[in-house]
Length: 362
Image 1 (cartoon, rainbow, N blue to C red):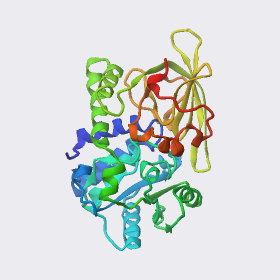
Image 2: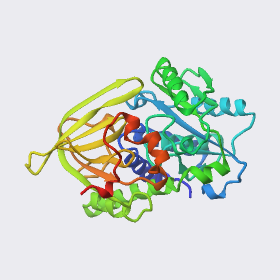
Image 3: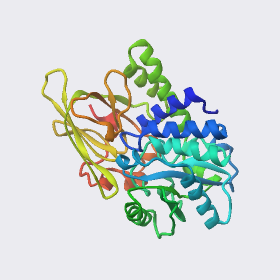
Image 4: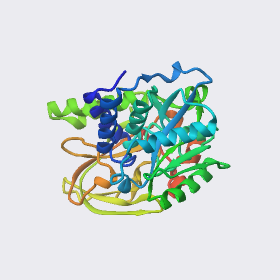
């Protein structure tokens, strides 16, 4: 598998869907990856199961508020420096790179990074979606260390963080990111090939490309939402899916604070029923309620898309008056275990309601 211009466009759209509102601007990410491929060539995409057990695999990502990420894209040198600083700290160069999440810009930046470094990119990630905090990744759930961790800003200032836990790393890096302007490059979770094979969510680069392709094909026949749902139902991870709501945005609160985009979106149903849906988000969409009753909740996917084109809408792109559909979908089983829910279930975001799989809501 290698990315060309067409597959990269499909991939970026699919990754925006899996970003569930967060993960950064997919359009900017696609342009960055496209430019890197044109300049350095497309990186080889490899299966997780092909890795040697003792291979060194490094994730690369942007961290900060998506509203700021949209204004401060990566220049490339910052990506190179983050990988270099972590490699120096480890005393070893990486054998491959891997996205830490398969959402928005953080799924396309690793393509840019792998192209620039001449390294292969693993067809997998640590979430099967996007999450806002460093500890919210399957690698942490199952015991992999988040540090040492390299942080780099757009002025090439850099910091190496060593922390006692991924939660502590998150608090330290978030404070550093705020002091560096709310958007930084990070490389963290140095992984062995054995750890990637055991704990990564596999084949998500291919799945994101398939989602984007389904939307594109659906537009040709006039039914992109149906095409999207049809593809999701064929997948191992996202097969429990449905349209949760069809409405117009009638209220939106969004603020950039503590290094996140936090707020809520309220929609009114278009059929005149008067029903309202609210979606709360912290970078990513966390919980959807219809007239106050939960109908989907993190870590399952809650994705807001344009009701005509099925274009995924990140939280920073939501606007008053937009006609949208809200789609809910299941996440990979590795993200629903009790250990995983302790790290990124509803209570991790201060939500009182328990996790209920989307397929159990009527």
